[in-house]
Length: 349
Image 1 (tube, helix red, strand yellow):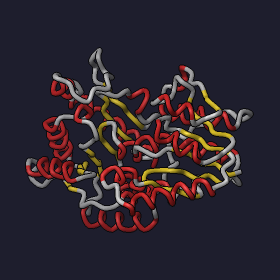
Image 2 (cartoon, helix red, strand yellow):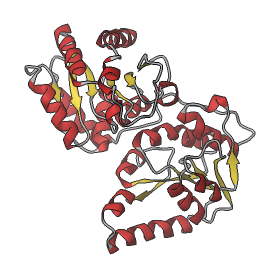
Image 3 (tube, helix red, strand yellow):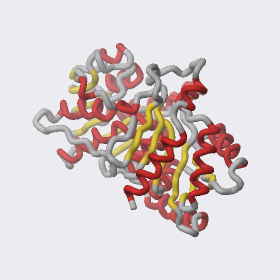
């Protein structure tokens, strides 16, 4: 049996959808499971035993440069999809883009969301096995599992809270060497990822600075700032200048290196963003912040994860711009984050 999972982006959403592949592979280890994803995120999927092949797209680059080279790359991916001979295609994204690739697969059984689950209605034209979501399918991972379990109607759903993501071996070696050099006292490594895609998801910089000062004064914690792009690095460097050298700055690396670092950390902190969800999937405890998004829908689950929702009636609002953005950010109190950090680290001792 050949299966194609279509979940192209974003990084956090791909992580949330991975339990669907684990569920299918555990039920039928002999099935071949392929995954279609944006090229930038393919590296996360390649080392996994649940995925037999990763097909990659570079739609972001194609939107920037409609060159013959990029069009040829897209056509090669389409040909690979057509040649896959897929028995089932699972569209776990539910928008027009994913629907296009689901339809061109030519698969006889194309599973996707019913009208109450799609992001964009044209996606409904691409699928012929539509799965209606119930109230219990509120979390993103449960939405993916609802589609996957419809393929195995005789098998109950199984959700893996963590351990379904793995860092490449060579990345683990590099990160071990870097940590040995930069953490000779073997303090608790607390990774702090201050960036995210939406401004309204961010926790304010002054809150981060207060938290990092508290961590450095505790003596046994070593805060480590990570970043994913130039803007996030500038923010991290700006915070560093105010910390008097008491905080480490991640030098950067590929996604494999970041996964290795997150797996070695004692705790990871951040907003609703890819690195937090990667850390949870790797089995690392997390503390995460939710303002415009819903922790009950997006947040890591399990006793080793604490999600802090902004205590306002309008949260979650899904607004990318808000006149009360600063107030909302400060509504997640530093003391509550401190308490969450101590609770999880004591729990793991």
